[in-house]
Length: 278
Image (cartoon, rainbow, N blue to C red; front, side, top):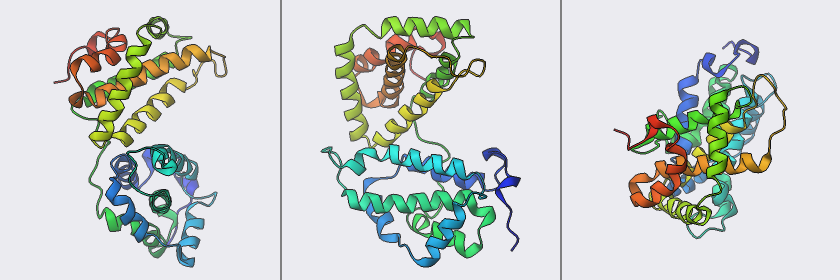
């Protein structure tokens, strides 16, 4: 079978295996604790698997840098599990470590499918498909107020270009001012929201939302890359926005007053986001 090289695929949108890539990535935030041991048990590192992995992650493999970036996202989503210090972590670190090897092999296979043989592709993907026979998640489940979560996350790139966008600068300055108010109340509300994420099995989606939001706000302005900003101000604004997004994520499991403490400082500045999503 002829193999295509990575030079023929310029972006993820052009990838012929895009639905499978997106399906695997979307599933990651919804991996249950009881599925980690199954992934670990299904994974093994034979010579054939190792050779397939080497080919999948070779420099000329399609979008290999994006695949490696996805590996970093996996580590971030499962950071608590890998450290094993939190009381809510129920799976051993060694089991999670092995399970994530199965996850990374699946990601590598999905990205590199155009340059892998059928046997190489199946060898890398087999542990993942043992637990997830088919892609069942189109995008991460952001809860009943998903549209508000998305709208808030979409706001963050606007803030990152505030140096050339008057509306972005207005919002950013207002958020800086609000970040100093009710800090103790917000800290308590944030802890309550995270506990709600744990109880509703959304703690990995919580991590995904925070990572996505941080990337959006940290995106350099295309007009003046490298211009320094006040790191303390940026950190405060980022925390305010990410707390609001995560509160919306678990709003159905929080008292309205707790949700309001975290969301009002941000959503009150954005009229189209006020009120619960229909």
